Length: 146
Image (cartoon, rainbow, N blue to C red):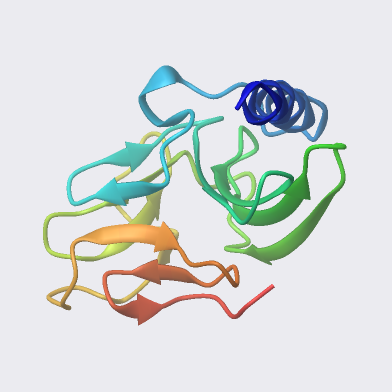
């Protein structure tokens, strides 16, 4: 059990360092280590959700400080690869899982979305990542496996 706790602590510190070095910024406490969003929750600049695959590898959906919503596959060593991106850099500011079931990226000073999952009124109640790296908005997959 001590080994697992030590590996988890190492993984968390490496993951945060990887996010900082990778340009995504630091994560806010609200979504720092959770694995899903529920309707009404959002990711602001530098915030993310994480799905651990095992003690060493994870998937992460990050609302980067540059405005791009990006999914990464990473490990505790600090290696990361991009799995998917919304291509909203320099235009996005936050991603919100709206109460109508749509997951949307908005710019800071506008109510006009720059990206949408087009999942309004769909079934399901979370944005999460499965063990293969597929990001789901409710029951709708918005990415492929990674």
